[in-house]
Length: 137
Image (tube, one colour):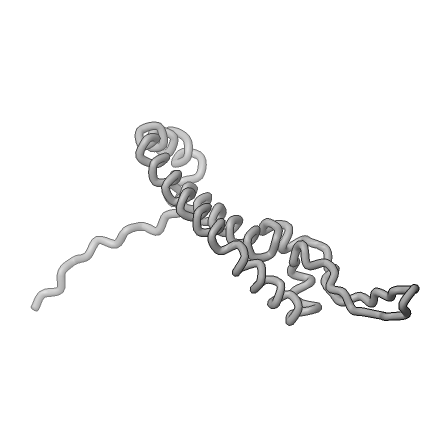
């Protein structure tokens, strides 16, 4: 049999697909770690257990601190506490994250359809001359 010639499509980067992926990442990051992607990477390392003592009764207890926002530093220094906190955040925020993901998907789909002509003009007249043919809207 004769092998058919296949036309290979040039790999391109889509700006809108990148923005949509960033929106999904932000939704997941806020729901799971309590802060955005940037906050996860650059946040304070403050997760840990601190001793709290009651002077009147003379009882000392351990209390979890810094669980409001998990950062990469927290994850590296206290992995078990970070994973436990992230798991509880995930289970409590699963419904809002699903709703936000669905609405983001619908918004991008509708936006692409409504703005098809202006986006193609921007790609043709602005993006391709400036960034080259490997980038599209």
